[in-house]
Amino acid sequence: MKGKKLNYTDTYVTVHQYKVPLRIHIERRSNIRIAVGKDTVLLRIPVFSSGQIDKHIATATDWLKKVCKEQPQLLEKYHISKYAINREVTILGRDKYELEVSEHNSELTGEIRLKDNKMLILVPNGIDDFDKRVMARNLISKLMARKYKKLVEERIKYWNDRYFQKDVKGVTLRYNSTNWGSCSTTSKINISTRSLLLPMEVFDYILVHELSHLVEMNHSDRFWKVVERVMPDYEKAEKWITDNAMKLDF
Image 1 (cartoon, rainbow, N blue to C red):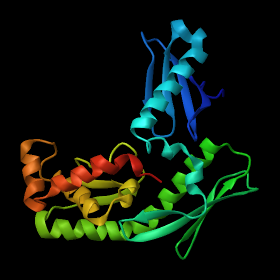
Image 2 (cartoon, rainbow, N blue to C red; image 1 turned 180 degrees about the vertical axis):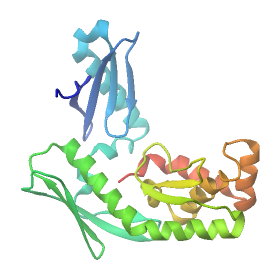
Image 3 (cartoon, rainbow, N blue to C red; image 1 turned 135 degrees about the horizontal axis):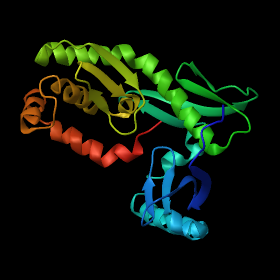
């Protein structure tokens, strides 16, 4: 069976001190589009101008330099050195972990070890910085999901018992870069592990927000009144997230 044909090309561009992964898609479209994605910067090029890829890469690089000047932290998530020794990650504003990435000879997969408050992240040698960063992020996320699952369930129970009294069918904790949490129509709540990087009071707002969806499965005025009834100053948490979201990732 033949493998799935990839419809993109990966490369890197240098933006100030950052080596930024760039994924190039050639599509039936009328103009180019550049966007900062979860794992790569996305460059979408029209088929008719695919012979000018170098020119479009230069355009994307110039655009990223401008964006980086306005939001210096935006490209940090693409930089593997953030996992170097002495770099710390803080969970819920209280638990600090030192991170260190080390290469080893395994050709299979990565591994993470937690001793006291130090995470040693083992990745196969020979992989590029992009794959190394994604692997490290996924390993950290899965470890934190296991370690903090019980605490998240306890916090959800606290807020639910006190204000909602709804039947929560299940709680999952997994990485999601596009939202902080979600609530399904079957009353299951999913919390992104990225939410663990929030201060506790802001994290609690995420839980209240999702529990409020058990009352109103929308973002109508009725929904926000439910949130406000439980957490009158929720807008402070919203502002904190708006101001700091781009800096928060594993």
